[in-house]
Length: 155
Image 1 (cartoon, rainbow, N blue to C red):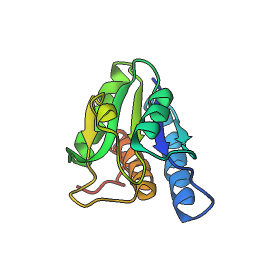
Image 2: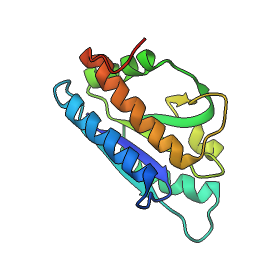
Image 3: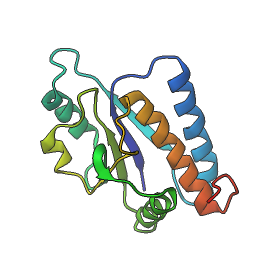
């Protein structure tokens, strides 16, 4: 199993990058004993056009063949953290790769969204794509703690 995040934009040194690194490090430590591999982050950026279609092409290239594709999209399902953890465990048990896709400031191209196995919304509000990366990293860590029976998640 592989877990990838394909995201538009490059995190520069700063609070968002520090938070993503911290949560993904925690996930790697917690997930190791659960059969969950460290998360690989693939950042893409189209410096020429910056259109959703151009970003979609770059994101498509970052998605591993055969991976379950999870789009982070405001129109998606709003699973609980426990539901998210169960889905992650299911992919692990099937030895299926998973790739979480985060679009740029304008969102995801409809053609790319159509490839999704699952679309997730982090709430009814729209979030900046850099914060979505932080929130996804935290939810991955939270999912690992739920699967490990850790008290981090208080339901």
